[in-house]
Each structure stands twice: as C-alpha cells, then as structure tokens.
Amino acid sequence: MKSNLNEMPNKTETTPDVPRQFQRNTLMKQPNYWIFAAVTLLMMAVPLFTSSNSVLFMLTNIFILGVFAMSYDLLLGYTGIISFGHAMFFGIGAYSMGLSLRFFDNAEAGVLVALAAAIVLCFIVSFFVGLLSLRLRDTFYALITLAVATIFLIAAEQWRSLTRGSDGFNFTADIPNNLFGFINLLDRQTVYYLGLVFIVAMFLIMRRFIYSPVGRTLQAIRENENRVASLGFNVLHYKLISNVVAGVIAGLAGIMYAFSIRFVNPHSVLGVELTIDVLLMTVIGGVGTLVGAIVGAGIIEISSHWLMGLRDVHPIFERWVILFGIIFILIVMFFPAGIVGTIRQKWKARRSSL
Amino acid sequence: MLKVNQLQTYIEQFHILQGVEFEVPEGQVTVILGRNGAGKTTTMRSIMGLTPAKSGEILFQGKNIMALPPYVTAKKGIGYVPEDQDIFGTLTVEENMRVAMRKEDKATLERQEWILSLFPDLKAAWKRKGGNLSGGQKQMLSIGRALVNETPLLLIDEPSKGLAPIMVKKVMEALQIIKNDTTVLLVEQNFMMASRIGDYFYILDEGRTVYQGEMEQLRKDEELRKKYLGIS
Image 1 (cartoon, each protein chain N blue to C red):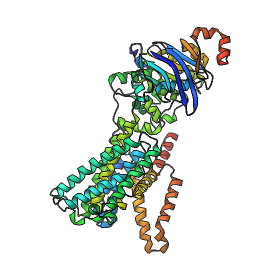
Image 2: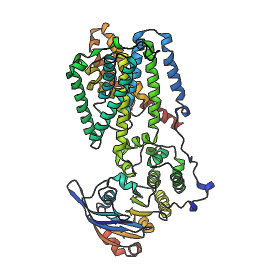
Image 3: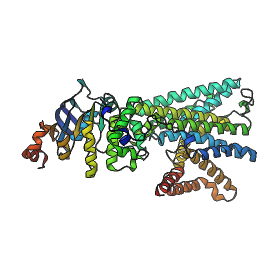
Image 4: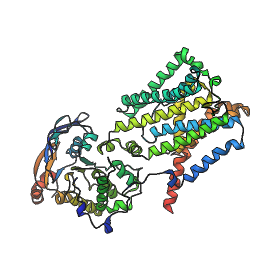
C-alpha cells in the first residue's frame, strides 16, 4: 500500500495513544503475579510442614498432571482442536525413562538418553500425526490421534520382551540416588521440588508461548480458521506448531511421571482413560485459561484420592467413580466455563459494572 | 490490477457462479452490485480461495491466482473484509490488529497508526475485546486488519450491512480516504454508499455478469437501477 502518511491528520489531534513498539505481556506486569508468587512460595514451604510421603506424592503428581493438562489446554483451549490420543506422548515420555533406566548402567546417560528419545519421538509422532490429520476436519484429527495412540498401546502390550506387556515393570531399583552427584530421586522431597520446578518452568514457558505472535495466531485460529487464512497465515503450519509443542511437553510430563511413580504399564500411561482424564482436568479447570488445567489436575487428583479413602467409611464409596461423576456434573452446572474461566468471567463482569 | 474471466463456482451441487467476468483497474473503486443471491459474496470468496472456483481465470497483477489457498492469495497483497466481519471476539482490538500483522516492522506500525487515524473509534476501544464492540467498530476493525499489511487490492463485502446511519457515514468517509491509496473491489447493497465511492460498476444476476458501466451512468439512469437492482 502506498500509505499516504504525509496526508495524515495532525498528530496532536488524532494520532492514537497506542505504543509504536508493542510491549510484552510479562507476568510481572499482571496483577495476578502476586497470586502466582504466593502459591509458588506456599508450595515451596509445604515440605516444611509435612513429612508425609503420601501428601508429597499426591502434590508431585498434581504438578506433573498439571503440566500434562496445560499441554492439552494448548490444543483444546488455545487452538480449538480435540485430541483423543494425547496420552501417547505422555506414555512415550514415561516409557523412555523407564526403559532407559532399566537398560543403562550409567544413570546420567540413561536420563539424558530418555530425555532426548522422548523429545525426538514426541516431535516426530506429533509432527506426522498432525501433518496427516490437521488438514482435515477436526473430527478426523480426533479419530486419527485415537488410532495412533491405540497402536502405541497395543505395541506396549505386545512387545513383551521390551515392555513386559500389560504387567508393565517397576524400576525403583534403577532410580538413581545420586544423579549428577546431587539429586536423590529416591527421596520424595527431592522429587517434589523437582516437580515444583518443572511446573513453574513449564507454566512460564507456555504462558510466554501463548502471548507470543504464534500463540495469538493460534487463538485466532480457534475462533475462525478461514479468517486467519485470509489474513495471510498458513493455518496448518500453526496448528502443527501447537501439536508439536503440546506433544513434546506431554512427553516431558511423562518423564517426570516416571520419576514419581517408578512404574509403567500400558494402561496407566498410554490408555485412552488418561486422555479422558486430562480432558476432564482441562474442562473442569477452564478451557483456554492455562492455570485452569492445573486447578483441574488438583481437583481430580485430590477428589479421587479422598473418595477412594472413603471406602473404609462405607461400602457405597467403593463406587467412588460414580460420586466423582456427580462432582463433575455439579462443577459443569455451576461453573460452565470451568472453575477458573467462570471466576474470571464474574470478576471481569464485576469490574466492568463498577 | 485484477481480471476475472468466466468464473464458475459450485457450492456442493449448486452452480453459483456461472461465468462471472469483470476487471478492476488500478487506483479505482469497482463496485459489484446485484440482488440477494446473485453471487456477489461467492465471487469475493472465490477470488480469495475460500470457496475455490471450478474453472475460469483470476489474474492479479497479471498472474493467475486461481485455486491458490487463501493465505497465499492474502500474501500476494489482497486484503479481504468479509460480510460478517469475523472479528476474533476473545481477543482485544490490539490483539486483533497484531494477529493480522505478518511483520511487526516500522512500516507496519506506521500503517497501523494511519488506520487508527482513519478510525479513531478503535483507539478508544483499544483494550476492549472484539466481541464487545459495536457493529460499526467491528467493521472498522475488520477493515483496519485487512489494511495493516501491504495491501494493493482491498476486497470489501457489504461494509454498510447492519450498521447505524452514523456508522455508515464514518465507514464511508474512511473508504473515501482509503481509495486514494488502495484499489478497491466493493460489494454493496447500499446504493447511496456505492454510488458515492464507486468509479465503475458491474451487475451480477444469477451468477453472471449482466451489465457494466460508469457509476455516473447508473446514478442518472433510474430505469437501469429498477431493472437490475429493483431500486429507484
């Protein structure tokens, strides 16, 4: 366009008060920075108040599943695509770590190989699954991810010599107690802090990604693909980026899960139930909020832990999954945009009415 | 700048465009007129590649852009403002503009500044979500987004549709300025607006180009308006 800047109206009269350089949406400039800092500090202090391994174990799993759910939110909440096979990336990560620790005598080498293998495999699988299916309608993507995830599940069940089939394998004996000379992965407190660092780092990275130009384009794609294409953006290219980032982060979460659980079997880390769980975590917490995924992971982990514990109180709690279903229905009824999403909506409505 | 020959487009089994032909000379505003269902929007969508044409020829700056994906067409320098504006409702005005920017360089930011001087209403709504804007503001944002990149040709589909008269006036004033820099292909039902902005017109009927001429001629010829557009 031959812009007629010379003919622009007088600057003092009409030039808008809009920055010529865009500012980054950094967390420190946000009012909820203090909430983030306070929650992080509180979580850092938890081991000072409790030495209960089961509490630390549960919180560690919430951190890890929170990261897994955030990676799913990137797909569902920020790109608008639904996957029924996201667990395969989590499983790739968990199996990479379990197998590496089993086969490598040197723990450091094992961990590094697992890390590299998980990242490369998740990258390749998410790239090619995306390339095959993302150009089609979203329902095809959902079905193709389900099909590929099922292939991974069946492979893990059938390749008994490597994976020990449906029984899976425990690798507690292979967990290093002196990784890189100072990390004792057999210590629950160490794994807890590792999980906390992991979720804080992943949250900041994903937040940065979401507010980047690529992240904004993904949100626009979620709203209207055709419009984004007519603005000159290759929609498939951006969806692939989202798919690969979500896949690799889910793989990293799988690695951390292996450190925490010290056991893998096909259904616990590759099953479609895990994808449904992560979908529930994202929906309960609030789709497209990022932090909602962590809240959703916390609610699912704590409520399932609590409901299972009630089995000793009354036999009816043997059917805790049904009760969990009721809790889910109540949350959807009272928090239609998820817990974080609904709170945000109400907060904004209140602010705008003042 | 743009030449369309014998454009044939189907939507499912329906033969919508049955030989649309027109030319958009550089530096002019060419208006496509026609009754509802004549194929005006489909023509725009076919040029963009959103509803790909089955046959015919679309030449932009001498090169055939038929069957190109929409993002390639846009990158070649064609901006598109669709009929329903398609604002990203959960993004702010600022984010809507930034999403549209293929580059965030000095020239693009200057263009943004120019756009905001054309549409000061957008300045006031800079941090508001797209979904909370009025119809007029959405239209301004949609036009602004299409112009924020280097855009030699702007396709605008019914910019006055559903707008209050005051907003129609504002959009029209902005288009009067935009046309000094950018070649425009305008689809418009509002004859008053089309006749004030347009230089040349084509009338579509049942997917075919049935009449063409200088806008001045249509302004003066009431019989012609009655015959093809049903307005006096």
